[in-house]
Length: 334
Ligand code: BDP
Image (tube, rainbow, N blue to C red):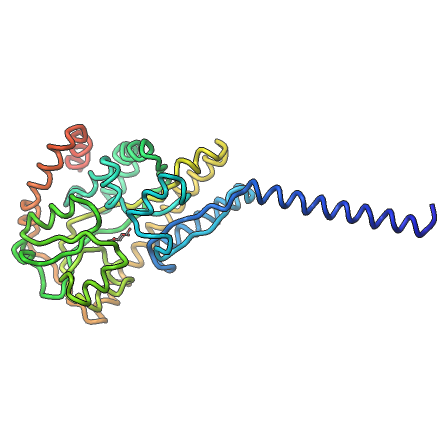
């Protein structure tokens, strides 16, 4: 073989090697479809940070078999729409409040009953135990796999009219609620008018007076700038609604058992991270809203609010008798 033909042979081998590598890369890319994650919150929110950490963890531990992108700030649609999308597999994963999920998954509604949890630590214990397992079963039946319970603190009322100290102060107020009939009943039981509305529309509605108030935890009240247009925040803490890092069952079923185990473990680890970040953010948000002009008031006696919720429980249990045990499991827990 002449020197020239040797060089030609080498070049050919090199070209073949290159095209082989390119071919493999193409195959790998085709196999590992990018997954899409839905999130309603801004990028520096505790939920968003924990979701990013979850995805990075999963990508590293599956050697890139699972990779993708998270769309923050609700750009993939409102929460009620995203719940439908994830059930269909059009969105692969997302972080949801169990509040709006109740419209579709009755088990999740149990945690939207006002004052059902006594404290955040109690909520963690119950969600990490039997109650959480029962709720996850209900979700799985509707096409959603729960891989981590996130913290969303306690929700309190805020409005532009004045401090709320008794249920009577809610009378006549137009209050935005998340999309769930339970919350409409909750406001009605105090004589207020509830308006279910997407999270992204609340700021403008408060600003223009379409609603007088809403209810949320301090980080959401702050990160959405609602505090600029509704400056009375009254610590009713009437709802402690956990949130969930969720995978579409369609996507979940496309993964191997090994990858499912990696995702489950990463979900749990991300929940630990999120809970820590939540505590920090809550404190910072409270400081920021007060510096921004919000008047925060404690409510000396919450008993009248709790008493006002009796019809909400009655109505719920009348139409969901099969969930009585789950309600009691939480309600009677220490
Ligand atoms: C926030 C929840 C978010 C809800 C929002 C709302 O984290 O999932 O969409 O409240 O009120 O606290 O809609």
